[in-house]
Image (spheres, rainbow, N blue to C red):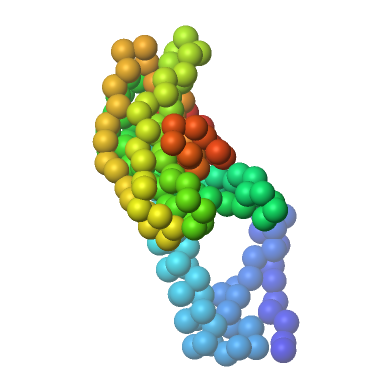
Length: 176
């Protein structure tokens, strides 16, 4: 490989007189294609980054609800989560709730929305129950309005025996 003569710019930087791919061992056409693909992917990445996301939509959040199952030890009995569209400081639209029963244990599973008001108190919304048994799942689409405001939002997923929680988890709280 030959070295390309360089000259010093008025600012003290070295300037090459030919494009850098001319001296690359891959050959002109292959290197130009590689450069074109790299620049094209970079441009797509810049366009995607510059495109505004859907306003006020949080990412899908999920957790797994463990509980102590006698001699089996700690097991996962439910998986659940969801997301929402935050439309104002007091209202959530398109609230998605999802829960799956992961264990044949005689318990049912449930999910509910929990929000934190601006005064710091939590609002526990109604449970959505799934009684169909292991391997089944269900989802709900709803909305939430609280005149006390909605500062944070998360979901609680539970393994239940009747109205009692056997095991639970909460998704990561999302700021509104």
